[in-house]
Structures are given as structure tokens and as C-alpha cells.
Image (cartoon, rainbow, N blue to C red; front, side, top):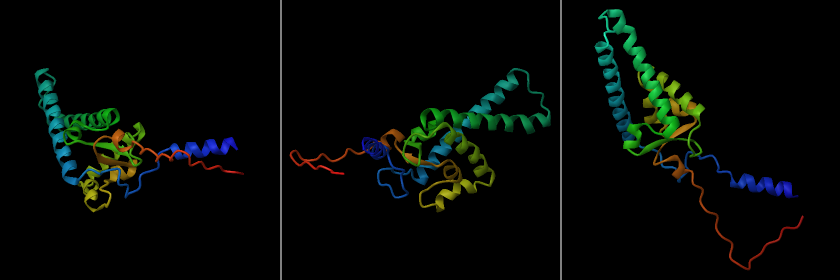
Length: 183
């Protein structure tokens, strides 16, 4: 008897998976997401240009066409991947996302797991490689989810995941009203 009661209490204490119509989770708007993307692109472009400048000043730049064709795109891709993984796994938002006050969350409203972040970052490369179709998918998806959000079971929300996942307190039973269950 105590075993089933304990299971029921544990099941009721576990937050439910957020549905597409969950009013507690406010999804980030497309303009906010676009602003965050533009800010992050500016930060990343600055990092790649700093790498290029450091590469030249160190005397490592030979000026050969092959070097320009493979080194900077590969280095840029590595910088983008590390930037996304480090910030999304550590803070649930990149600097651009933090500036416009949006963050990444799992579909349940909690902070995303490391595997969700990794899947999201890798699939975002495919989203961009398909001429940006994976990003524009959010325009047509009712829940504003991109390909990489769908693949990783994540959503982009306004605010922080911790605030979105706070459970509402249960209503208190009035004193004196006792109910007993028999059987």
C-alpha cells in the first residue's frame, strides 16, 4: 500500500512535459531570435577576424590560395561549434540570446541536457547548410521550432529555463476538511 502511494506522490511531484499550448512557457518571438542570431554572428565574425590577424602577425600566413580556402572556413566552423556548445551547455544562452533575454530549454521547460545541446548544435549546421531552410522552418511551425529544436527536443523561451520550470504550488486544503481513503 505504501509502495503505490509513494509512486503516486513521486509521479505527481515530477513536472509534466510541456505541451505546445502550455501557458507557463513563453516562446521567444522570431524577431528576438533573429536579433540574437545577428548579435552572435557579429561576435563570431570578430573572433574569426582576430584569429586571422593573429595568424598573420605570427608569420604563419603564407598567402597561398589553398590556405585561405580551407583554414579559415574550418577554423571558423570550429569556433562557431565551440561557442554554441560552451555557452548553451553552460548558461543555456549565448551572449546574443542573453542580451535579448531569451534562452534554450528542453520541451519540459527545464535546462537542456548536454546531449540535447550537442544534437542541437550539430543539426544547426545542417539547418544552415540547407540554405537556411532549417532556420526559416520556425516561421511555419506553430511552436516556432527550427529543425535543430525539433531534433534535440528543445525550445527557445523568453527568460530563463529555471523560471519557466518552477512548479506552481498546490492549492491548500482548508483546515478541518479531512478525507480518508479506505481500501
